[in-house]
Length: 241
Length: 244
Image (tube, rainbow over all chains, first blue to last red; front, side, top):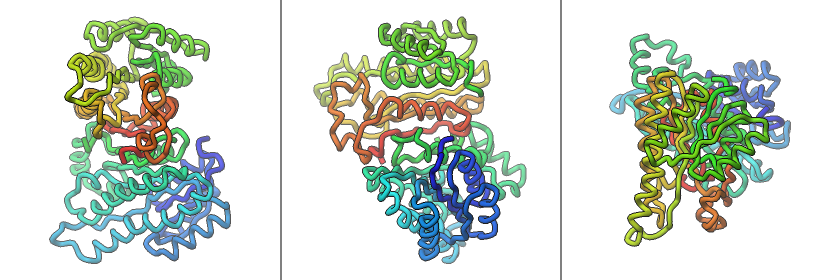
């Protein structure tokens, strides 16, 4: 087991990608804290793996602080933070509302800042930590209809690099994963024709699975990646090359 | 792809990162084909592989020569019938100097081994993998392949070239079921860097220390595994944050 005895907070931990990660980390021996906007889903997922489920809106600082306090009370430390929570509210630039912009920024960008800032002092105290942020290939390439989302995913890369520089010497590695097209509840609803078009754009000719991303999170959370810091790891089948 | 009894070809297997990868893949049950120009280093690695209960062969070859590359590939097929993993890793550093003083011989040699050698490896191994409709390739680039590297102009140019080869190979052969990725190690304590000052905090980046070959090899093992089956064309920096 690769995460024996480690305490891991996974934000968005009850959604498609996050849930896959929560289950995988638990199988690898971690104490998993499933933090999700949807409290009942968080508790449900946590129940499956004997973890802790917390309802948390990462855009609200008080809720994040409460989460961290609860985890410290329970386990005394936090080894791994997966900043996985994220939303999309797509619209072309001309049609995008202020609310669509603000909402996506507050969860995808400010939320990552909140969680990391609240968790890091506890990692510094232990001289150990693994922080993994979820970016996206659109953070490097942009995407039609995703001004807000792409901006936050670029911000995640910049924050990752900054924190890698600030925290490396304190025993904390900070990295980002940049998924490409991944099969989720969202893509399941898309027409087959559009899905085929997406597959054709990917050199590996398929969409990624939540498991592909969860495997990468696990690798970056494990000791196998001890010298990787400040890296952005594309997991996109070659879409971004 | 289960790694047990599958076949890995490792160039530059006689020392450093190549040796560590050879040992780790062998420990996972792979048959290893060790390629190195330095026969003595290659023999030492083969000895270590066998001491650990692994199986493999050594082929002495100059990766900058097409005929040598063709030979290590055909010999592998003769012995083991296939190539599942190719670690395209052999490289040289050359004598550091400013570009105006950089010798033409050094430049030619570095390009021949690091860049042409990587190309030739891809050229002959991809043919085999295309027939199999499967395979994984990891090219060794470097942080010098993604940023400026004063005094190592030829090396930096060769490694930027390896990054370009990697992306092109991933685009061309991804649809054929072959994954190609590159690693970009920063400072690693090996034979190649034994004359360099590895204690320089600037060179070591935020983690404040160089890597061990094992820390690089662990990443290679992940990239060749099924856990990384959706990674293709990725340029993975393993540098403690140096290029972040």
